[in-house]
Length: 159
Image (cartoon, rainbow, N blue to C red; front, side):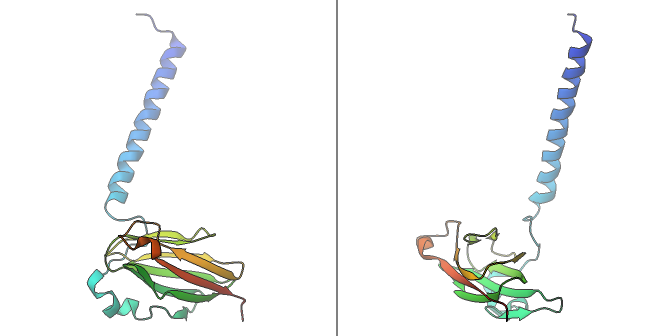
Protein backbone atom coordinates (compact mmCIF):
# COMPACT_ATOMS: atom_id res chain seq x y z
CA UNK A 1 0.00 0.00 0.00
CA UNK A 2 1.44 3.33 -1.07
CA UNK A 3 0.35 6.32 1.08
CA UNK A 4 1.27 9.76 -0.10
CA UNK A 5 3.78 11.67 2.05
CA UNK A 6 1.36 14.51 2.95
CA UNK A 7 -1.37 12.02 3.90
CA UNK A 8 1.06 10.39 6.34
CA UNK A 9 1.78 13.78 7.92
CA UNK A 10 -1.95 14.41 8.43
CA UNK A 11 -2.51 10.92 9.85
CA UNK A 12 0.33 11.37 12.36
CA UNK A 13 -0.90 14.86 13.28
CA UNK A 14 -4.43 13.53 13.91
CA UNK A 15 -3.00 10.69 16.02
CA UNK A 16 -0.94 13.13 18.11
CA UNK A 17 -3.98 15.38 18.67
CA UNK A 18 -6.10 12.40 19.78
CA UNK A 19 -3.33 11.26 22.14
CA UNK A 20 -3.13 14.78 23.60
CA UNK A 21 -6.91 14.87 24.17
CA UNK A 22 -6.80 11.51 25.94
CA UNK A 23 -3.86 12.64 28.11
CA UNK A 24 -5.62 15.88 29.12
CA UNK A 25 -8.86 14.07 29.95
CA UNK A 26 -6.98 11.45 31.96
CA UNK A 27 -4.97 14.04 33.86
CA UNK A 28 -8.02 16.17 34.76
CA UNK A 29 -9.92 13.06 35.81
CA UNK A 30 -7.19 12.15 38.27
CA UNK A 31 -6.61 15.68 39.56
CA UNK A 32 -10.25 16.86 39.83
CA UNK A 33 -11.68 13.44 40.64
CA UNK A 34 -10.10 13.55 44.07
CA UNK A 35 -12.20 16.50 45.29
CA UNK A 36 -14.70 19.05 43.98
CA UNK A 37 -13.08 21.84 41.92
CA UNK A 38 -13.75 24.60 44.42
CA UNK A 39 -12.25 26.13 47.51
CA UNK A 40 -11.46 22.76 49.09
CA UNK A 41 -12.22 22.78 52.77
CA UNK A 42 -14.06 20.02 54.59
CA UNK A 43 -16.61 20.20 57.39
CA UNK A 44 -18.66 17.66 59.33
CA UNK A 45 -22.22 18.09 57.93
CA UNK A 46 -23.97 17.18 61.19
CA UNK A 47 -21.96 19.76 63.15
CA UNK A 48 -22.07 22.78 60.83
CA UNK A 49 -23.81 25.10 63.29
CA UNK A 50 -21.39 24.12 66.09
CA UNK A 51 -18.29 24.61 63.90
CA UNK A 52 -16.44 27.88 64.67
CA UNK A 53 -15.89 28.47 60.93
CA UNK A 54 -19.68 28.89 60.59
CA UNK A 55 -20.27 30.87 63.77
CA UNK A 56 -21.47 33.93 61.84
CA UNK A 57 -24.18 32.40 59.65
CA UNK A 58 -26.33 35.20 58.32
CA UNK A 59 -24.09 38.01 59.51
CA UNK A 60 -22.43 40.32 57.03
CA UNK A 61 -18.80 40.58 58.13
CA UNK A 62 -16.30 43.06 56.69
CA UNK A 63 -12.83 41.54 56.34
CA UNK A 64 -9.60 43.58 56.69
CA UNK A 65 -9.12 43.69 52.90
CA UNK A 66 -12.56 45.31 52.43
CA UNK A 67 -14.28 42.15 51.23
CA UNK A 68 -17.69 41.41 52.70
CA UNK A 69 -18.10 37.79 53.86
CA UNK A 70 -21.48 36.08 54.02
CA UNK A 71 -21.89 32.59 55.50
CA UNK A 72 -24.96 30.57 54.49
CA UNK A 73 -26.09 27.01 55.04
CA UNK A 74 -28.42 24.96 52.82
CA UNK A 75 -30.75 22.47 54.44
CA UNK A 76 -33.88 20.72 53.34
CA UNK A 77 -35.69 22.88 52.05
CA UNK A 78 -34.33 26.31 52.94
CA UNK A 79 -31.29 28.52 53.08
CA UNK A 80 -30.13 29.81 56.46
CA UNK A 81 -30.56 32.72 56.60
CA UNK A 82 -33.39 33.20 54.13
CA UNK A 83 -32.50 36.86 53.54
CA UNK A 84 -29.12 38.62 53.28
CA UNK A 85 -28.33 42.31 52.75
CA UNK A 86 -25.03 43.36 51.14
CA UNK A 87 -23.69 46.64 49.68
CA UNK A 88 -23.34 47.17 45.94
CA UNK A 89 -19.92 47.65 44.35
CA UNK A 90 -17.95 45.69 46.95
CA UNK A 91 -16.46 42.18 46.64
CA UNK A 92 -18.77 39.71 48.39
CA UNK A 93 -17.31 36.37 49.48
CA UNK A 94 -19.90 33.65 49.96
CA UNK A 95 -18.96 30.71 52.21
CA UNK A 96 -21.55 28.00 51.86
CA UNK A 97 -22.18 24.41 52.89
CA UNK A 98 -24.94 21.84 53.16
CA UNK A 99 -26.03 19.89 56.21
CA UNK A 100 -27.85 17.05 54.46
CA UNK A 101 -27.85 16.49 50.68
CA UNK A 102 -26.34 18.12 47.61
CA UNK A 103 -27.93 21.50 46.93
CA UNK A 104 -27.40 24.16 44.30
CA UNK A 105 -26.87 27.86 44.96
CA UNK A 106 -27.82 30.24 42.16
CA UNK A 107 -28.40 33.97 42.44
CA UNK A 108 -30.73 34.66 39.52
CA UNK A 109 -29.66 37.29 37.02
CA UNK A 110 -25.98 36.97 38.00
CA UNK A 111 -23.08 34.62 37.41
CA UNK A 112 -23.09 33.51 41.09
CA UNK A 113 -23.60 29.76 40.91
CA UNK A 114 -22.13 26.83 42.84
CA UNK A 115 -22.88 23.38 44.21
CA UNK A 116 -23.17 22.73 47.94
CA UNK A 117 -21.94 19.24 48.73
CA UNK A 118 -22.30 17.88 52.28
CA UNK A 119 -18.89 17.72 53.93
CA UNK A 120 -17.38 20.51 51.83
CA UNK A 121 -17.33 24.28 52.11
CA UNK A 122 -17.93 26.07 48.81
CA UNK A 123 -16.55 29.56 48.43
CA UNK A 124 -16.67 32.17 45.70
CA UNK A 125 -16.37 35.94 45.45
CA UNK A 126 -18.41 38.23 43.25
CA UNK A 127 -19.32 41.91 42.94
CA UNK A 128 -22.88 43.16 42.50
CA UNK A 129 -22.70 46.43 40.57
CA UNK A 130 -26.42 47.25 40.67
CA UNK A 131 -28.56 47.47 43.78
CA UNK A 132 -31.65 45.29 43.66
CA UNK A 133 -33.55 42.35 45.01
CA UNK A 134 -32.17 39.00 43.83
CA UNK A 135 -33.72 35.56 44.19
CA UNK A 136 -31.52 32.73 45.47
CA UNK A 137 -32.64 29.30 44.29
CA UNK A 138 -31.52 25.71 44.66
CA UNK A 139 -30.89 24.35 41.18
CA UNK A 140 -30.11 20.79 42.23
CA UNK A 141 -33.05 18.49 43.01
CA UNK A 142 -32.82 17.89 46.75
CA UNK A 143 -36.11 16.21 47.58
CA UNK A 144 -39.89 16.66 47.55
CA UNK A 145 -39.76 20.25 48.83
CA UNK A 146 -37.11 21.37 46.34
CA UNK A 147 -39.52 23.69 44.53
CA UNK A 148 -39.99 25.88 47.63
CA UNK A 149 -36.28 26.22 48.45
CA UNK A 150 -35.35 29.84 47.89
CA UNK A 151 -33.76 32.80 49.58
CA UNK A 152 -33.40 36.50 49.00
CA UNK A 153 -30.34 38.69 48.46
CA UNK A 154 -30.87 42.41 48.80
CA UNK A 155 -28.08 44.50 47.29
CA UNK A 156 -28.22 48.00 48.75
CA UNK A 157 -26.68 51.32 47.77
CA UNK A 158 -23.29 51.69 49.49
CA UNK A 159 -23.38 53.78 52.66
